[in-house]
Structures are given as structure tokens and as C-alpha cells.
Image (cartoon, rainbow, N blue to C red; front, side, top):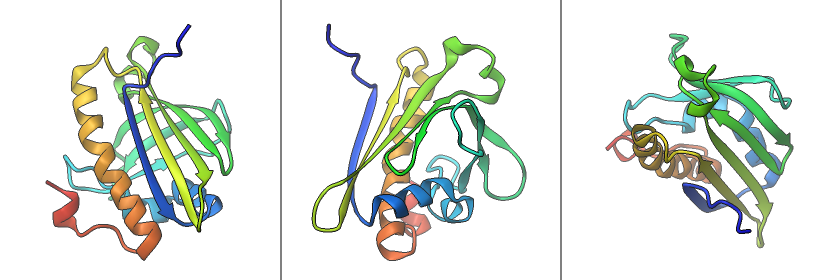
Length: 160
């Protein structure tokens, strides 16, 4: 039996170490600099204590406390793999509405790290699929640029 293919797969190579990339995925202060929602044009942060079973929230970084997505940490193996379920705050209780995000971090070569981001179970929600498929490329480009230069992409490049 073939394993199910993820709905979205993004691969990028970043000049950093697995440990520094993991830290960028965990640290709210650095995340506020690179996680930019291309549709809303404002930064987001993921807030959690990160052990499997913990809740996480995808919050606006403007201090408003607005939560755009939330759910549960499924797996956290520093600095290799992070997996969490993804749902609108109003749909967290309905597991049929959840999707799943996986980050796989692997040393590559010559000081590069391979980051693979997979987002599964989006076919049941076309609006979510549209937002995610337009959002991840910009978010990951911002992450790569931030890790390699210390600065995210300029706002005009990050917000279409």
C-alpha cells in the first residue's frame, strides 16, 4: 500500500545548522521577524511549550492576542522533526476539520540544511488549501532569507 501523499510539500536549502533552524522555529522573537502572512501582511508567531500533546497557537505578533490557527503538538524531536495539527480556533474541537503540518530538518552538505515542510489533509477545505498553498512559499522564503542574512524579505516582496 502506498503511503498517502501530502497535499503540499515545500523543500528549501538553508545555509545554517539544524540547531539554529530549530531555534528559529521555536523562538517567538525571531519568528515575529520572518513569519509573515502574505494575505494579511502582518507577522505571526507560534506559541507553545512544544512537548507532544501540548497546545500551540498561531498568533498575530502585534500584541493583539488574536489567534489565527491553533491545535496540538504531535511530535517534537529537536532538531530534526516538528509536527502539529492545524485548525481554525473555532474548529479545534472538530478533528474532521484538522490538517497537519510537518517540518523535517536534515543536514545536507557544505553547511546547508534541507528543510521539508509538508501540509496534509487540506483537500477537505478548499479555502484553507488556497490560503496555505499561497502562504507557505512566502513564509519559507522569509525564513531562508532571515536565517542567511539576519533580515526577512522586504515587506513589498513578502506581501503581494
